[in-house]
Amino acid sequence: MRIISIICSMILLTMSEYAHAQNPIVQNLLNDVRLDSLTNFVKQLSGKKSVVINGVTDTIKSRQYQQPGNEKAFQFMKAEFIRFGYQVDSFQFNASGKNLLAIKTGYKYPNKRFMLGAHYDNWPLTSVAPGADDNASGTSTVLEAGRVFANYSFPYTIVFVLWDEEEPGLLGSIAYVPTIGSNSETLMGYVNVDMLGWDGNNDSVADINVRPVANSYTLRDKAVLCNTAYNLQLNLHVVDPGNGSTDHAPFWNNGHSAIGIDEEYDNDFNPFWHTPADSLAQFNVSFYQKCSKLAYATIAEFALDTVNTVGIKESKLENGFQIYPNPFSEQIIIRSEKHNEPIESVALFDCTGNIIFEKRIDNLATTVFMPATLHEGIYFIKVFTSDHSFVKKIIRQ
Image (tube, rainbow, N blue to C red):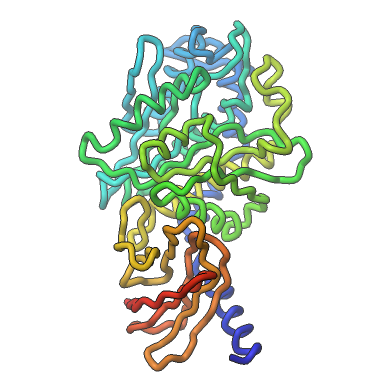
């Protein structure tokens, strides 16, 4: 094949990816996110600003699970979700701990759920412990999501969840995750946010934690795509295997699709972590808003997409690969189930054997966006690894 043909095909693919990656509803939703609202929630949860709980003005001085501020935080957050118009539920898992869930029921698939969550308790065990970054930042991101998402409708159900007692050992999420499916609901994917405000070296690096469990790689790929499509300007650092010390881990341990979004832990860890000095004053607020928007875009993209779903095995395993959906509309997802055999490239052919495009990958999973000019009909996609190749018939509808 001539070099010029390969270059032209790659340019066509790149243009189609850009053209189809952005959803105008998601962009409108992101435009509704307000930094002053995000930081106001952080101020209220970290004791910098008073709150009104059951008609009484009070201050949340600590959310540590043995402190009275933990219950105050729960009541404040519950009232906020009710104010936004949500159905609210709680999950009591021991004498002191309870999770808070706000449910936005999908109009088409009410029993299929996407979840966005964070833990609201904090550390250390002192009477005054702001816990602004860990994890008023993530909690406020979930509250702001509740405010913004309330103005939109989604075919899938979205659950905003706030976990208690993460600090003593992920107790809230560990207790809840095994109950998923007990009421005939299906978890499609979970996004966790834990510590989003610190960027000490101002390099805009954010972590995406992932493990090869269920369709977690598909969630990761969507987050990476959203960062580019919505011009969030984060430098994403994929951590695989992801951090097991926060609330996405119980989802992986129970076979569910999940990712965790947080500030960079490895090379720029917040030095005020777990101290009374963890305050809003240390935030890089622009970075904080970008991380929040990444979580929102990822959840919203999936919750609006009735063609390509995550969390359900849409195709059977063939030759070590899953390729779905089939028939497809604008994109397909390719996953290798052989962790030591990443996909090196894919190529699309028409029925006469003419190549339409090629794409180099070097990964275990990818989302392939089809050219906008692709007509309905039968095509063949060829997947290459270092050891073998595999051809599958796919249908454009």
